[in-house]
Amino acid sequence: MMVMDVGLPLALYYILKNYTSQLVALIVSGLPPLIWVIFKFIWHKKVDALGCLFVFCYILSGILSIISGNARLAMLRDSTVTCVIASAFLLSMIPVRTRWFELRPLTYMFGLQMVGGIFPPVKWTDQNGEKHEMVMFEFLWLHCKAFRLHNYVMTGLWGICLMGEFVSKLIMIESTLDIDTIVWISNVIVIVVVVVLSVLSAVGSSLIRKISRRQVMEFYKHNDYTSQFAEQEQVASPDTPSQPSPYDSQHQKLQE
Image 1 (cartoon, rainbow, N blue to C red):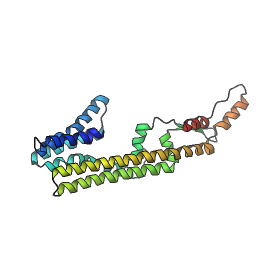
Image 2 (image 1 turned 90 degrees about the vertical axis):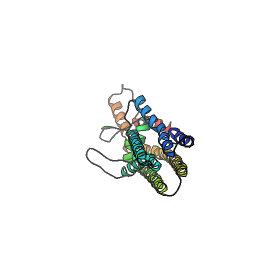
Image 3 (image 1 turned 135 degrees about the vertical axis):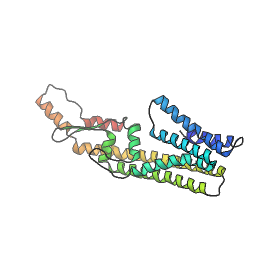
Image 4 (image 1 turned 90 degrees about the horizontal axis):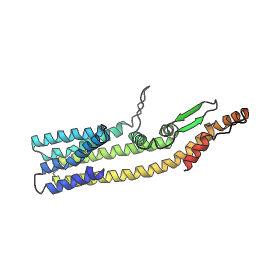
């Protein structure tokens, strides 16, 4: 949530720095995201790996900042998390495949978790009469080149841009810029990166959805023999009412 991760911490920092030191203001401004992570853990009863990483980085940077008295160390907190996330995006693009595991782009994994269950599974009957069923996301990954390309491109963009934010933060921390300027610029960079990439992801997903629909229907036309086998069964048992093929039902769902 942008308000909890950026808006509220930024507001707290600029309010508190008028009444206390910059070090204390920076440490306290990191509390809203920390509280949000703990709240989600209690509410959903689920361990969030990214949330645990943020908590660890927050505690570590806070301890180092207090010991050293250097407020700039506290500013590495969020960027450390950003660096790890960016690395995860980039590493997920490596085509690692074993008998038990296949590494796929992180945007694909996020999409599968968030909306993968919404789409109906792809069902078809091959020319030998064997029935098949596959999760829509898995089917698109295997049979839609544009879908794979979209996930690789978006994963690469997220990884490069987030890593760029981390590098720019390091450069600013090592520069002569004052802390107020660094806080302001770094938050603007985060907002711009998230908004621009979110818009690109939404536009790209809309385009890929249209392409995927066409490719699914093409696959059915050339590989689904459900209607033929249904007709054979109807001829063999004329009293049995005919059933619509997966192609017919899938076509109707995709059109909707």
